[in-house]
Amino acid sequence: MQHAPYHNPMPESAGKWLAAAIILLVLSVAGLIYGNHKREEPPQRRQAAAADKGWKTERLSEIRRQTAAPSRQTVVLKEPQPASAEVAGQYAAARSHIRAGDWPQAVPFLEAAARAGYWRAQNNLGVAYLEGKGGRRDDETGCEWMGRAAAQYVDFHMAENLRMCLAETFGGDYRQTWLALQPWAEQGHVYAQWALANVLLYSRGDVPQDHRSGIRWLGRAARYEAAAMKQLAACFGLRSCAHEYYNPAVSAALDAVLRERDAAGWWQRLAAKLGKRPNAAYLSDAEKREAEQYIREWRHLDNRRLAEAVVGEGAGADL
Image (cartoon, rainbow, N blue to C red):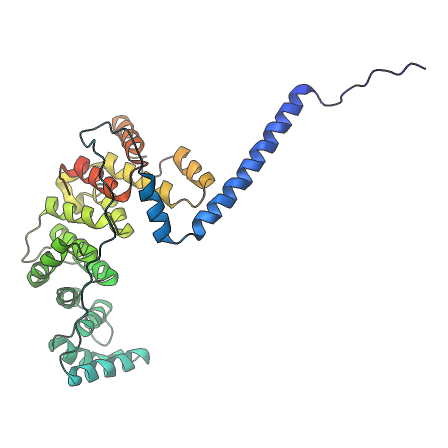
């Protein structure tokens, strides 16, 4: 008996497509595993790995240079303590009332400790005025108290509070804060640099605005503080931040680079890399081309060189 020759029911082209799909599936699973592994690494290890790679990139502008990434800033401010046991007791009583939700009872104790110079009481009193807790709302007075607190001690929360105060309120006496922040900033304290940048960018009181210096200090802080880097991206896109340095191409490019870095795994980073630029809709065609050029230049820079490049292109300044 003769048998009909064996007939493969799957065309050769379909088999190739199936093989390609299997390979793609394997790569996707491997990418997800790798992305999850990277997420589990501590930030210090990720930063060290990025620095050790020593990214090499072709620079297409005048900022062609390869500088070593600096070590994490080590300037630590010593937290001022209450001047006396009496002041410490006043602040403790205020905190007890705050925890009980009784701000009207807390404010008199806060005022006593704040006028004695205790920075924590000054900061909390500023919050009370800004939010109208325990009395009338007074943004200017609240921000002045926060400014006095920041003149003594500044951390992330103090720098953020001061930024919001300066950007959203008018007036205020920040000269003491400005004078106190400068030596800390010069020594390399990141949050002092960030706070000083905002005093120079937004102060409408007795400290004259200096947008170029403000952007330089913001760039220095951005080398280590992610919130400062994001503010730097917004600053070039907002005329209210530094009107003479408004540069939407720089703003959109830095925003796109940061979005790529925020993506968790390689698949998400690829999607961010190839996707539409969310902040590019308002750009002209020439600005879009300029932004894409910046993105190609900046994509693989470490934070220090990224901040240097952005400030150099956007404000013509060196850090």
